[in-house]
Length: 403
Length: 123
Image (cartoon, rainbow over all chains, first blue to last red; front, side):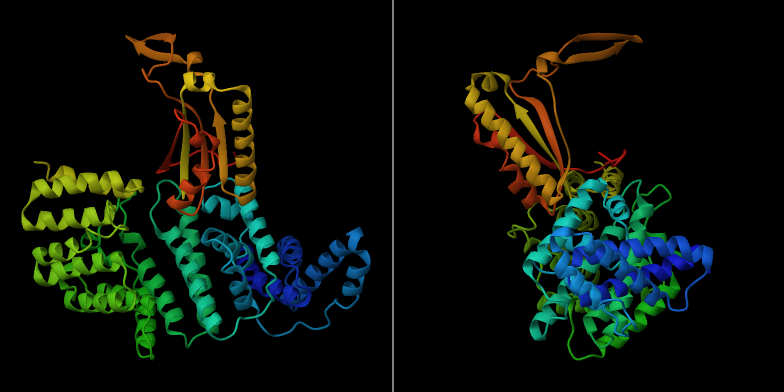
């Protein structure tokens, strides 16, 4: 087995082993340390000595021993812990995969989204603190403090290691999906200079979404999110120039789109749309699939895109959705109709001075033949964005039509 | 999201403070740094010497010219900064309000999002 195959296997097994340990002992933090040590031992021993017969059992055993050692060395608690330790050493490894439970624990609502994201990548993704820190461009000490605090807060909240029941479970699953979506976007959004680490994050988000989908294949939104990620990721090669400049959707070379990912994503969308209820991820995936369906930008089925945004706007009203619908409406009924819809957003506090509103208005003004107005809005949009790639793109649009 | 919280000080205002007030500012910053480290939101913080110690550097015809600073003709100068990584702009502003300087007329605290970063992360 190659080293990278072993790494993949370890990444897959880590959350399962951690889940098994937490189920037995509780103590998220201590279990996590023990599992990290076991994984480290495996990454040294397995390439040299070959895979054990039961890699998961091996990891559980080694991690349990480390945990017991750690607990024994804790003088203050010696008696209580040795009692626990006596009952541990596993005879057999339970077959249940606790990864989903672990994911739900990491996405505990008591944590901020930033902490949920970091803890998920660490405990479920099996990334090291250093890797996570690099991906988010913060010092390792900063990320270590954030993860350790997240673990303490979960401990303090006293949550049990089990899947929540009923509506709470549904609600928590939405948080899990949101966290995976955040991880994906962090990896997908172009950022100058550090692309490598970032695309790792997108891949990791897709891997985790696949894992959740494998366990909850009937959930339409889980399917929808996975499809949305695959369909979005399919455009990666086409959406920036070699120097990292953004290429808008209608100018992308569609032969560079990954057909394999598109086919897989489209199949998933179709399957999920047949289900009973429609959610925002499914609709966004359906929109992405509609775009993917067109061989050229001109062939895009804009009436369908517009119809999907209309439904999305109804079930999950949000100014950003209205903004996107305005783009589709402009394609169907002309730029004036798009501009009219945009004007309904002017009173919305969340959108005031937002670079997306400014840049879409600039784009539509350009189409109506108002270069002066378009220039002004492109410039304002460029000043409002926090992304260098986007700023360069908006500046270039502005200079193209400079009056 | 990364934000730079820059601290604009007015040396005249700072000089006019009592020793107790100066000490209170120092303690306030100490507490603020501890809290930021614990929450995992601090990337780094640096304080700058008094603007009167600044050197203004220019190169004319290939020759360096160094004069006493400060360069800006202003009442307020950059006294230091916090570089933080937090959830969103609202949180950055909430953190900034905990800085003791915000309670003093003549000292300014400004929050701006970071757009590009490079260099070693092990601050």
